[in-house]
Amino acid sequence: MQTVSAPDRAVVPPPARPIHPAWVRASHWLNALAAVLMALSGWRIYDASPI
Image (cartoon, rainbow, N blue to C red; front, side, top):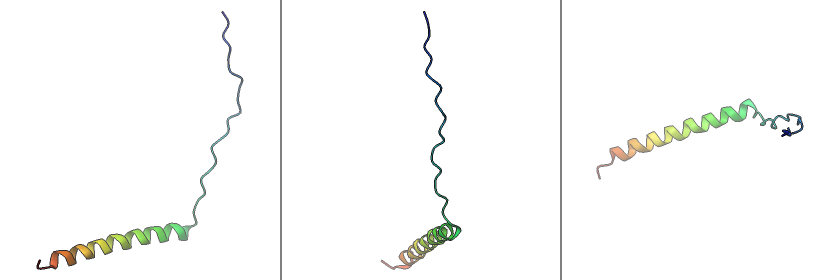
C-alpha cells in the first residue's frame, strides 16, 4: 500500500489589515469617552428626577 501525499503548496500569508492613521484611532477613543460621559451625565439627571 502506498501513501499519496499532497503536493507542497506555497504558504500564502493572509492579506494584512489596513492600519488606520493615529488621528482615526484617537478620534475613535475620544468619541468612546464622550459617549461614556454622556451616559453617566444622563444617569445623574435621571437619578435627580423627583419622579
